[in-house]
Length: 384
Length: 123
Image (cartoon, rainbow over all chains, first blue to last red; front, side, top):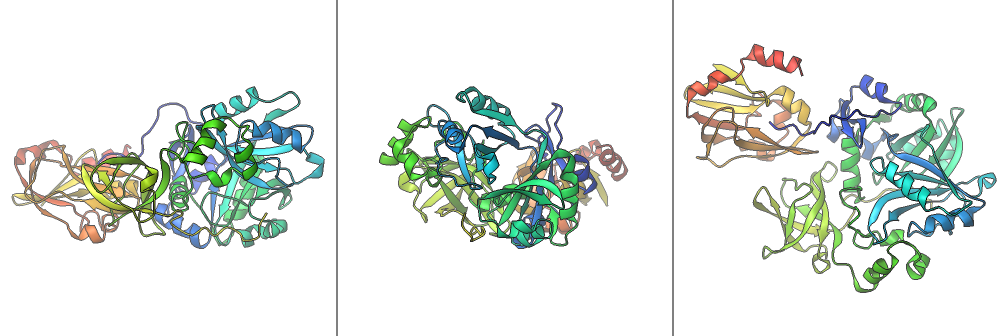
């Protein structure tokens, strides 16, 4: 039998919870240069379903955290808007937005979350969270393009936890009462059992949930307090991947990369109207042309018929056998109870219900284009 | 009844001139929840070390290699509807294929149960 997990030989970095993962019975794998838990004893299927029904705790301390700091919000927002297509100026204090770092050709260098500090004393501070694999390059890219008066401060001393699931809010409120009142996609600085934390109401599972940023030395206390709650179980990267795939969320390096634009990736919702109209971000010419004329390809959901999964790299053909695209993420959706995938196809064939064929190990697997997400999002209703 | 094992964590249980092939308990635990099994056509000949089946977990697809050469005389069709049987009972109801052995001498190169246990312990 082939080993499903490739093992690298380079020395791996660890998060502050590495020993805790091992004590919890995690199977550790190399991911983005880190030694990370892919699953615990329950396994991916049970962990995935637990998050959809209860609350799961993820260690995402491998991700890059940093602060962009300037004289005031207008200054720091203008600086980030030269690199990203989201409307950062319009963020109210404590509001969070998903956006992308773009290359000069409009290709996506990475995707990230940006949160305006809720604290008036910190006006001019944006908290950024970028992907683990690209963080060194991201920070270098940002730092090299900042105007005088705006600086990037890495927050490598901070760990990051995600608490996700329909029970997350009630659990977190026991340690941090303010959490229950937070709107979706907002962030605050607060205390968790007396420990200073930054909390945002966001996540990567399609469920309600929170991300908790805390100094590395205090993360074990926060994690242990949450894991001590009966609704909370530790969840590995395997279930994180199946949860985000069912939620229709992109994984950088797979569903989006330097060759895809936000228009192709069906992320137009993350480019607010003012930015789409004004431009002023890298690749604006191409992106605005794609908005006007349509992109050459577009990201869609794919539902294979039957039980066989179609993995990343699978060729997509139309009913006549002509290649129309490629699968960028695919696997088994535990909540869907069957295989799910995402990929890029020609726009004419992106209509939900379109019959396509997926070529898996030389055989044609019938599938249909499907709307995303596969599982309805259940984010907190209270708007930001 | 002889059971032999490969370094890739397949087992082969010889019963007369045919033998049942599956994956070991260690292998199913490494894979995690099995969600799909692709079985070969009846009558196909497989070479020692060649692909006999494909097993897919939530995360990934893995090949199951034939421990010895032979002809596929039966497949475990029940796995198509209940792939999780591979996790629940890998050495019993979770078998993949039955082969008619082309060359029983090929079995000599495989590990016995004690050797396989020692091998797994060393991983």
